[in-house]
Length: 388
Image (cartoon, rainbow, N blue to C red):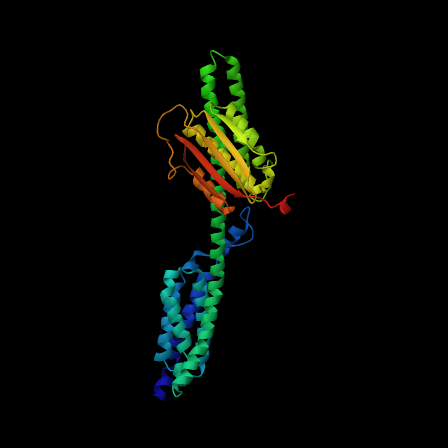
């Protein structure tokens, strides 16, 4: 056996070095970049100095599995000792690097074979060198070599987790921006455009008999159009730079009187506002903006779903720790079941309900009286110590 080992020593050494050569070649293949590709990316206009990772990194799991299998075979099929043990140490280091890279970039479904086989290859390689030791000592040796395996997994898994959290944060930020965009378009632009439609219809009917009223309708159309453009400008500015302050503040509860007056002048429904002089001060800035949105949504729904309603009432009632917002309209001249239902509707009321609940309040809407409709929102009031 000694003569056979000496005669086949170079061949055995070559076979023993095969896993190390394959692992090193895999790492070079995965991380190497063609020089031309690097220069092209660095000279590209607008380049930030960072290079995107090669796509080859996502295919490291299968080569890692093959290297681990070769390592296990050579550990138990070839004799160890001397230079072979030193070669195995280098092989283990390359396997750990390959394991960390695969854990970092490879798909999870492809790690189910690479990770356990690499762990076996790293933890079991010393066993042929200590065949005379007890089972307890062999177990301790395996447990010791599990530590670098765990370290390799952590080195790869930690940046992977951080990247996943960053992507999730970006996705949530984009979702919040889309939600804010939809709210602005629905709450403000839709309200102004519906007013434009009502005024245009009224101007068409009175143009021949009362030109002065038609001119007034055109003036109101112009004002509603400017308001819609301002809301769209705020939205576009928010999309371009979410951190930049808006040039025009978002309307709050203090602007409800002008909102109600404009609503009355723009249609057949007469709206009344019942709000104590300092009721707007009882709401924080965010709650005041929410109150304005709620009233806008309620009046827009009156215009869309009950255009023949004779009267709409907006009541703002401070009640100590809360502020109640109640918008009620009658059924008008039409004798028919209400077209809206409490369990169905567009995107406005559900979104406003979520917004009110996020602020610590509530929002409900449903039929009221004989064919009318009522929306009730309760928002938390600002404590007196927090008032400016």
